[in-house]
Image (cartoon, rainbow, N blue to C red; front, side, top):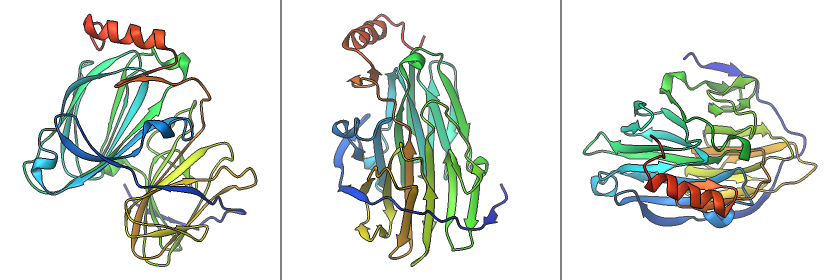
Amino acid sequence: MTQQTVKAQSVRMARGVERVINGQAVTDGAGVKIKRVLTQPLQRRLDPFLMLDAFGSDKPGDYIAGFPEHPHRGFETVSYMIHGSMRHKDSAGNEGLITDGGVQWMTAGRGVAHSEMPEQTDGLMEGFQLWLNLPARDKMSAPWYRDIPSEQVPQFATDQGATVRVIAGVSHGVQGAVQRAATEPIYLDISLPANAVFEQSLPPGHNAFIYVFRGQVAVDQQDVPLQRMAILANSPDADGVRIVASQDSRVILVAGRPLGEPIAQYGPFVMNTQEELVQAVEDFRAGRLGA
């Protein structure tokens, strides 16, 4: 995809930082080492987002066991690979290989079982998995899946030096690879040389955060160090965010319209009530999930 250069936009009043989150070192799947940045206690605050995992290691023992087949119901998973190679297979018959710069967007809906297994035995594997909630009306929808290779992720540069990949939503008039009407997610990968500035308009009602995975940036003059998430304040008068790179940096910016619905979670199932969770577990045990 050809990269276009656009005039940098400016926001009238920028959001500040409500708090900076370190995240938790955990293992998931068959022993993959990850950093869980958006944890369950933050789900209400960052509605409609349920989880963000960051992973990055050049030690095969940290990732080689992968994520064998497991079920999901009631939300969407967005896997973004910065470096590495991982194969997706699911019970709906979808299969795809995610490689450097690629995205896999899966709507679990009423249920799907899938596996995500490394197709490399050495080298760096780095990326993110984001969980995006579905509104109650869509939780039992048919599963859906899309592979988005790197060259199909829209990208632009600003005249102030930022390079931006638009995974979801819209930035500077550039439509992202995926749009969602219910949650209106914005998902950007922003590369900034030292001292560069990037400004992004955000709807006032959207919950939003950034995560720094290269360098260090400042938001409203507050430093956000490497491997930290900054939750952006929901200021009613603010119309966006201003990010300033303290050094060569790279961040993801994620924002979405909150659903404002009850969240009931049991592991890989996210519904609205305990009764729906019980049904999900029963369906899984009976082999009805992802059939």
